[in-house]
Image 1: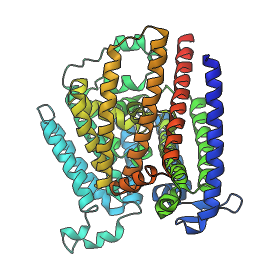
Image 2 (image 1 turned 120 degrees about the vertical axis):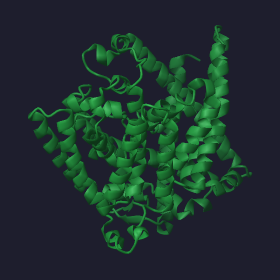
Image 3 (image 1 turned 135 degrees about the vertical axis):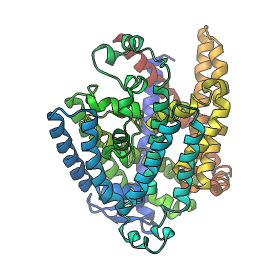
Image 4 (image 1 turned 30 degrees about the vertical axis):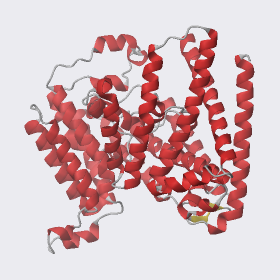
Length: 521
């Protein structure tokens, strides 16, 4: 079978699959909507709207006020830049505006944020030139855990004289956002330490190889890797970095080096035209999300527990839909905040640069989900822990940290350890195949087919791990297995595997087309 014929058949199957999913999803929603929680009156054709996800509900409900706040923020910042303000001057302006923003979000709890951040700054400045990495991690992990255990510390803990401040805790729980602040505090500590040692990054060599930097623009990698002068590690710039308004609530996560580098010169990688187009694409994605929540109710099925009483086929459709809902939700959240950061001249890494339906192995999935967090983990955990030399051990430490960073829940630890279990065979197979060179056409064909089978297995494992971690919990594994391993569920399981196998082969064609496009440029 020629490549073009195979591609045509794959596309026909994919279109048929999605048409079936859409048709069946509409039927399930129509038949069961009366039993679902979290549905409210919508604006599309008088249908109910699924707002069962608290994170999406809060974001969608506050979208107008957020846009107004960031519009004012942008106006102030742009006006100040016209007066020639650079690093320290701009950091003071952004710090003042961001503090007003934080006062609205957290009220009196801003005191907790400033106190912990100040203590971390002193720790870095006092011990940063010595072997202080252990202290940095102990300090930040302690607050990461204690913030959750004590639910943001009621002021009444410190005596009745402080109890009245509990009436002024703002509109948003500060300790939820503080997880991102902890990542920034660790970034500041490492970047300050590395600035005092010889930098192995070859700037000239990078500029020659990088398409952006060779054209006079500055890419994110260069911003992150080059060392800063000591003056950039001031308390004002540090605090501005921690609470920079556009990226404060949800990221994307930017390293201290990259952030401080852009205070003097705003990002030049993305032109105004590109930023505007980026915003328009976001609006289109928002309309896609509104259509999904008005017609399919995937998350409401999961929240209500109603999907447990459906057939294995319908359970697969709801599970698949929930994962796509989660992807689109985070896509919209992260790109909204990154859009405002770009307008203000600060480039952050793009989260979710690739669609969830275009990932067929764990490594590419993780790199293309919370991509900025992945970059942070590689820079501040994976490489310091030994990199590829200790990769099989690193994944356990890193994913356990990721689970604890998200929340103190057993289902997240189950997700982390399941991911590690699935990750290890993939790493071993990948390491083995890299040492083998397939030359014959038959060998290449077999290798591609086996890779497609492996991709189908991996996608199944990814679905299970993420449903366990973010929907059904570890206690739901037995229920999930019982549904699909019984006589009624086996045909659905077989159909899932065939679909994922075909989907993986389609992803291979997409990857090949991208490679050809790059080589032709």
